[in-house]
Length: 556
Image 1 (cartoon, rainbow, N blue to C red):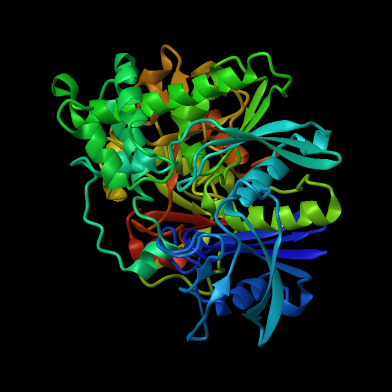
Image 2 (cartoon, rainbow, N blue to C red; image 1 turned 90 degrees about the vertical axis):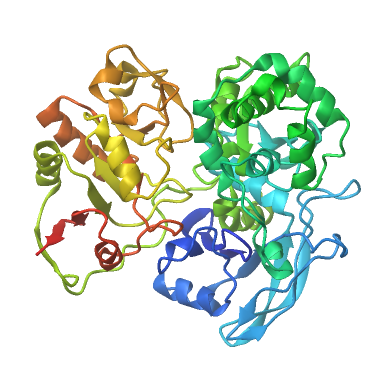
């Protein structure tokens, strides 16, 4: 059976699952240099993406559309998407509610008719937005393939953190309840009210429906927190302030005012960075405390899957992994809505087959568009991986790498990356200047898996750049470009099986330099998705050399 999952709102995308195997997952932002968080709001794009995979609309057995919320003031039990068009014709597409209610189940199916694709209308199903996070993350984890049950914590922008227990055979999902009444966007909304990230909200109602605000704030604020000091002594103050608010889905400005008003979170002249670091630390400690209380004396599995946009916070992830409650904490590379289309298709397949395990790989996004000719002003020549390693070692300059299929999720993991030596501390400034990013932003390391414990603490295998690691003594001086302000690094490890191209490159680079890692940051225009082809990277021109599938492109 061929299932096509669709996410039509922000972080839009399409995923194909055939008999439990992921064929591809294509995010709209990774097509045609689209802006980040691009909705899939033109349904004719669906046929184009399918055709690129050699699939016709008529080949698809089932279409699934991710659930969403209705505009404020409308019936949240019967949401309708009104921002989607078909060849310019405005549509009204009913979908499942955003989250389950007190009398419904997270995996409840909603059936509809009238999805216009390929010249005719199709039946489609829809599931709660919470369901796709839940099942997409669990299905991609190692647990169902081993017949293991797991806890799944879902915490996304417009929902509170909810813990589920998922059993694979037979498939059963039990809601264990809300951990605390604080919606996932609280951290971003709080930070967006502070001067470093404040900007007016001038979107139309239609834009708000498809694109929640502050989507780009949380990642920047997580990095900015390293400029400040986390003060756990203020946790009781935050408990008191938050306890006086209705935070299940409160207005973000109300939250920020409550936390930053005089006598609130601006304690003793704390800086903006101190406030952000403390609130981030508080939320992590609150997560840990709530999970500790749930696990105490309960007969629950010692395995935890994290899902939803909050699982992009590497500080919270690392805190939960090291807290001692769980034998294994697993986070997919697409915990936010970039994995929503995949999650929607996973729910449909799991309920149809009774088998939730998904066969997948992280490099299953859109293919690099082939270069029919050298871009204007560039010349190319053959260049194998060994020579690319030599160029990086001898010249010390950044190189754009575009190869094969793109990564799933928001992190560039070596197929849509800018790679550079990490041995010069100035390289972080160089890369941030090239990317037009703030100077406090970190640059991540990509490291050979078997060498990682020597360089990092704990240095465990982390292929998706989703946890942070300390830098071991002596190595911060050897690879200063990848060390963040707080001494940590957002590590990506590679081995030959999971990432053969990057593994070959790092192995060749290590032979020349003795260093088992490189700097890694995404290859894209500011505010846009990954470059889809060499021509886009050349037109951008931020880096002088582009390597793509065995050819090196340089200015003439």
